[in-house]
Length: 195
Image (cartoon, helix red, strand yellow):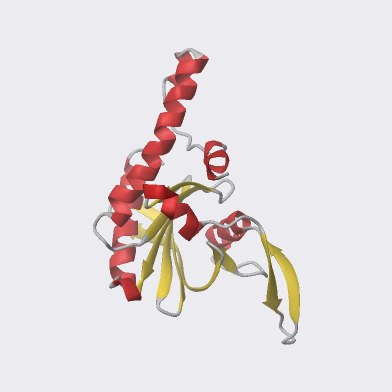
């Protein structure tokens, strides 16, 4: 289930794969896919600053890499298939809405605001509390977004082509500051290699 989602959204970057035989190019792409999961784990999970992390293409907001890698635990924390939720309306009534989490993430990355159904990641609703469309770090400029809920949150950095999400949980001894610091470092790395 999750593997099919991940294969459909491999990152694009300049490569020389086009000159390779198709079977070799496919094998390399599949190997690279797993490496993105490991890269997320290395940059965002290994130091303990985030309990989960994900990488999505800016083009569609769909995650293609998740961490922690073991037993695909990251996928359970960051992604849920389309689901129906009762969404509070301005008049205090509730309306049933179908939530597509990739669409929610894409909307927040593009506008800094949650769509009408809210920002949902991993089946959990977050409130967008910070948005900086021109956040500068090192030699790069990113879109920086922060969303939270009681004792938890997600730091979102948007590069030219990717959306990076680092999730923290205060009950696991993690803080928003350290989560954001790790997410910024990963964004700088990705921007530095052309993403």
